[in-house]
Length: 81
Image (cartoon, rainbow, N blue to C red; front, side):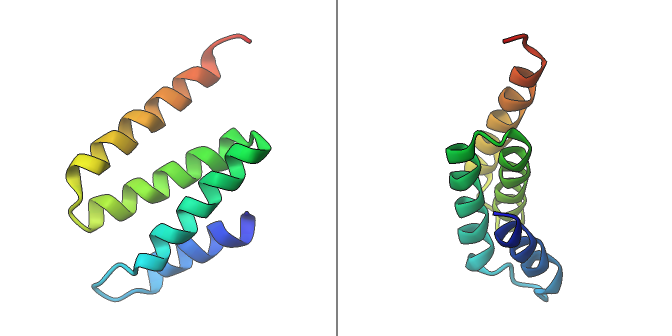
């Protein structure tokens, strides 16, 4: 999970003007693994990464969905269990 997240970040910062689809694939996998492990911090990082991908590629409706999901996940952290 950590290596996939690192790879996705490297893809973002080393791509010239075109964001590679591999970035989306890496963040999607990080989100899946974070969910399996109940790792909220990496889940939030993956949501941010997916948001960044959709924002940079112009997929604005999906971008808004991811932003809302990120906020909801963050707000859930503040709720006592």
